[in-house]
Image 1 (cartoon, rainbow, N blue to C red):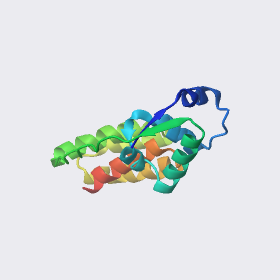
Image 2 (image 1 turned 60 degrees about the vertical axis):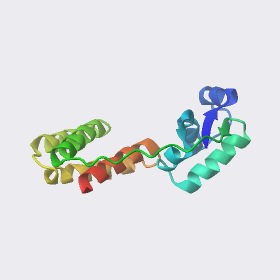
Image 3 (image 1 turned 30 degrees about the vertical axis):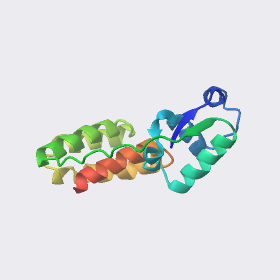
Length: 153
């Protein structure tokens, strides 16, 4: 299933008149006509997504259409060096969302790290700070989950 914003949905993003919850608004934003339902499920809990989609469709803010299933991407096995670089890059970008002191601490830990194992403390720091700060943000959850996966692999 592929969901797209209707004209009313586009207007709602500007007007904020329908009284949407933060998760419903997030779903409305994420439904760009390119993300499949599976993509959305990877970003938020199924119950939250289902109820938000139902409400948004009932309000006429989203329109759904059946599409052919997509081919699943092939998982690529990363070398240890590639994993290290990916973790450093993602951790550095995530650190920008921290407060000043935590950001400096994270950046120093990233700079001192020489191996994936050395990065485990910064991954823990980022996940603990950002999970609490952005707990209702599906995109942040997705980025943190990717960081955890890279560090654990």
